[in-house]
Length: 380
Image (tube, rainbow, N blue to C red):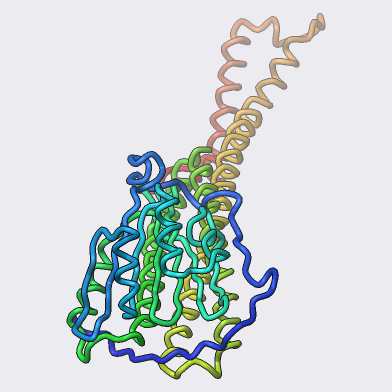
């Protein structure tokens, strides 16, 4: 695994605390459903804590750390990456945060769910909160997991609803094998990697939605059904949730870069600009997919309109063919005494033959004009 070629140095300006500087902003509802793994645990995963200690002798990984063990590790004064997963035991989590000297005002942003996406500075720390979004087999069902990060000098703290080992295991291995040895400056690199890892998961989600919308558009053109339109509306609603997760982060990271431009090193500023670019790309793709949802709706309405036109055309053909026949039947149905045709021996069969000739002539004429073409036939 190649090392990350980033060596940033962040100098954060001290901010004075005053009422309203930082407030927890909870969402009215979760962006999606809970993952299956959290349903199995009754909605809350078991609480676990692990610590990656960056000591002068090397990187040490401590698994399943309790409050007493964290106090001993904290006393060494070494840079730490503390990872907490699962929100089932809030009391234990609060004790761990107290040992790490995390301000009480920051606790709700890390422990309460669901939180609004945010990137804020408070005193000498940086708080990041966002949701890892995904989908089940059907992209109309969105699932989400909240992840919160808090970074200050010599400390990177991550609090997640569910334990995801893939990216974090690779990051721990990179720290252990990094040359030169890892130090406190690498904590900012790690926050950037964790941030990017969550954002990159949005691209496969949007790609699945795009493929599903293509299938829906093809289906509504072949055989428009109300349930297909309902699925398109569900995807449209999920895209609205995705946009609501992206635009606050996009505006806040732009503000963060502008306010801290003088204090950020060139490498650090470039990384945050990369995050801004990724957020902007995701926002544009989600907006384009919302327009594709509208295209599915328009295709459905056009297909239903074509079918309705086909029905009306069929009824019109029937009316046109039977109009002269009805006229003849009306004439010979009158009760006048002097009607010579009524006394003909072959009057009835001749009248029927004449009606058949008129019907055949009308059908031939309408066929030459293309009235019998079916525009709703399924495409092969």
